[in-house]
Length: 407
Image 1: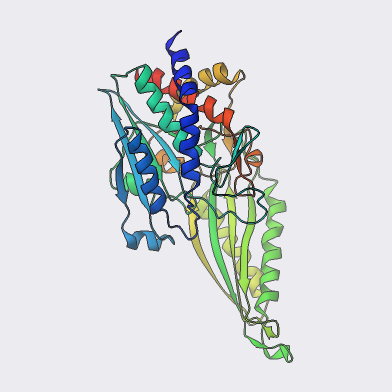
Image 2: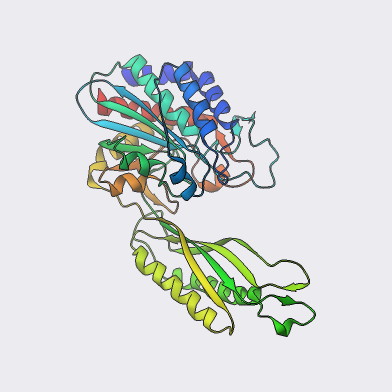
């Protein structure tokens, strides 16, 4: 049995423990908002310590957390030093969107049925806390590396942009790896991704009694006019195609809208939040300026209306750095061996924390446990799930990849 087969066998032998570890992580909610993530970090640190992995807990100052719109954040680092050589960081995030409606399973139970584990963050990306931790344990148990260092970075601000997650760790020089692998899915290695601009638009008119509507200025009617102008952009965006395989074109979504005071009152204020996905070829400043112009021009067609536009998130696109080749080559090689099929290097329409490392000059890729598509995982939808065989095999691929780079 060669070393790769021994790594696979160790992971097989400890797989029940790995699944139980993931179940425990799913059982501690990390809904963001509201973003009270410190309790999950404390539980994760306890579980990792029980496995013999020393954990550094890095609480983010409350003022910074509150400015980011969250309640508590403690980021975790596990450092495994083997000897001189490169530092490889493995980053997964524990924060997730709230469950929403339509679940047939308990979103915080980690139920297993027909070979799948169900729960919020089972696929994105508490699963990769398990992938990365058990890959490192397998590496140390089997290969006993004497070269380089591994850092497990478990952070809690992906949903709100990463500024008090990985960006905070980088800014404070708590991590400075040479290479990065971040949470992803198993059937592709991702080398590029879309950017994301999120803005809050507040439309103000004048509140009035519904019996005399002409005495007011209807903010909702104006908001509908603005929304129609924004949605019309999606038709134009389809004409702008990305050259990155796996990424198509820009698009815009309005995710929330609220306003008004009562059914019998002309609404004097309406606000909505929009999400604009940017392909890697786009300039974020130009995208934002264009959106603001569309909103301003539409609002100007409605007398008595004023509009405030506030940027709430800017996540730049990830573009590949040349230094990521050792990661891509190793993951593709071992993915082919473990999954029995080619693992293409692609872009994705998602945005992730990896861009923060790439912006800092650290080559990175996205790879972890998950299905072929976001749709299959039910991420951000009801009944999010992960095929446990994908967890097993992705862990084997990561362990083999670490072996190639560190042994």
